[in-house]
Amino acid sequence: MADDRNKIAKYRRPINLNIGMVIFAVIFIYVVICVVMYFKTDHIVGYSVMEGSLTSNNIYKGIALREEEIVSSQDAGYINYFAREGERVAARNLVYTIDETGRLADYIKAGESGENTLSESDLAELKTEITSFTNRFDCRQFGEVYNFKHNVEGTVIKLANYNILENADALNDASGTSLINYRYADKSGIAVFATDGYEDLTLQDMKAEYFDEETYEKKYLVNNDLVAAGDPVYKICKSEDWSIVIQAERELLDVLEKKRQNSNDVYVEVRFLKNQYTAWGKVDIFTNEEGANFVSLTFTNSMITFCTDRFIDIELLLEDEKGLKIPNTSIVQKEFFIVPKSYVTKGGKRGEYGVLLETYDDEGNAITQFIETPIYHETETDYYLDDTVLRAGNYIIKPESTEKFAISYTGTLTGVYNINKGYADFKEISILYNNEEYSVVKSNTMYGLNVYDYIVLDASMVGDNEFIYD
Image (cartoon, rainbow, N blue to C red):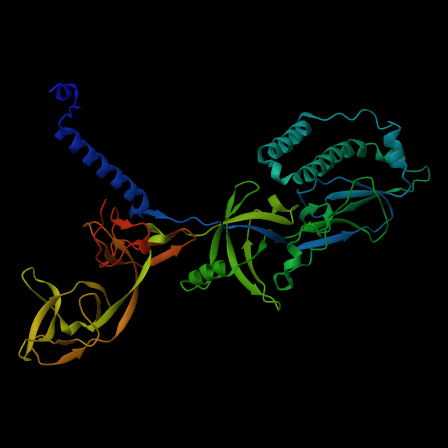
């Protein structure tokens, strides 16, 4: 008895299950599993179709071609210009003088010409040129600074030379022989004081190497330089008709050829990046012996603005096709059965389009069954029907006739998957224009898309009639 009293048994509490904790644990595990599955599963993303247009990179470097004539000096000596570069000179207007002895330069250095002060109009001319350069300056094209320097120097020297010209007669020798020769323009045009060897270049002479600015050399004709008889002293641009030639890729040629189908003469709107002005240029296309393609854009105005520029950056403002803008990842190609229209009819409870399919019962007797099948495209004679309902080799019956047609012909359509109804429904599209990321398609077509339709962003993630889960 004593031993039994000394034995102590450990009391085990009964297990009390808390039903609330069990339910919470189950829900927690379920949520964790759902989260893990969500991040491991590829999700179908929708895209809302909107109206829009495409803008592509149509910026080109062009070579300016003008009707240019180089004028050579008739005498040897020091040259002084009295026409400003980039301005129109009339026939018989003074362009430059030739100082045969150099006494004019000595006369200027000695200060015998007196104080040369600029008038208010002269200062206004300089301010206009400086302001114009400041407004259009782009640090990425620093080379324009040197052109600006050359233009300002020419303007200042021209203004100063007009003051000196009033006392030029004092340089003639006592015998009355004139040592300063006055040279006038033979014809009217725009005066340019530089040469580069491109003056006689035409579209038919074009080669890709002409666009390399690193090998391009421009020789400025500087005031007070010593020239020999026969040396070029200036060139004159005689006509407002001029052109810009660009190198063209195949895509641009296709766009221009498409425009040519509607008209023999094709015009393209061009924006000049130098001043953001726009003009319409007539298009001519040339392919040289090496297979390089060039496009010439001819203008009838604005030549004076760019008369000192050989290389001009432009943007082609090609007409943008407007329609429904969709990503290229949504586009898919799908095959359909091609069936004559006479074999398609309406039937069933909903009166939808379909065909009378010939089938057989258990006893082998031929029976006719109406099969509803949507229409995805039509031509003058045929319909394109879904290949998920019908099979190759099936026979369909012509309504109110015993004629049969064996389903075998197929055709491919380009389209997207519409998910307005919660499943992937193929819709045909007609692409107007595309680039690397987007396409513009026709809107409000019979079997196509409409604005605000919802489509699958990545068509490779879904199949025909697949249900879309959020």
